[in-house]
Amino acid sequence: MRRCRHVRARLVDHPAQVHARHRRQWHPGLENPAAQLYPLLTDTYLPQGLIGLVLASMFASTMGMTVSDINTLSAVTQRDILPVLSRAFDESRLGGAASLRLDRIITVCFTVVTVVVGLNKDSFGDIIGMIITWFGALVGVTGMPLLLGLFQRFRHCDGRATIVGIVGGLLTFAARQV
Image (tube, rainbow, N blue to C red; front, side):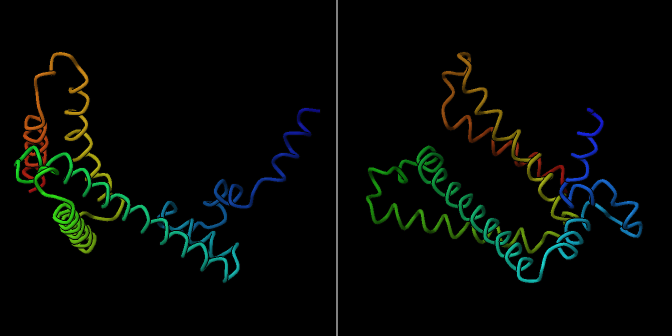
């Protein structure tokens, strides 16, 4: 009785699951199955109009995520990092219009850096290689000061120590890449 339920469950698997399980048997000519299987599945099983919707949704989600990240970086830079580096960037001294203008300038700078890095992706190998490289470079550098700030021993360290640690880590990463 149990075997029948198991067999029945296998018969109603989603085509993508079946295809993923048997990809080497059905498509032995794929050189890189991890990169080629999703486009092949999309082209095989979806009608033309739905393929366009899938591509549009992928581009929309990527753009939304990128814009969100750039706005977050801009806000953190303006509110948390720049006032520690110089009192001229303090919110109370800048005023509303100047603060908004500074935030827009920082946002444009981060956008330009993102576009330049994206255009030079070939120097990183590929997109996955670029993500892994930057993830490895930034997580430890920014994560350690945040984690150490939770401990009582580091209660006297201020924002300058954090910024020095992050800049030192980024310079070390840059030196190792060259």
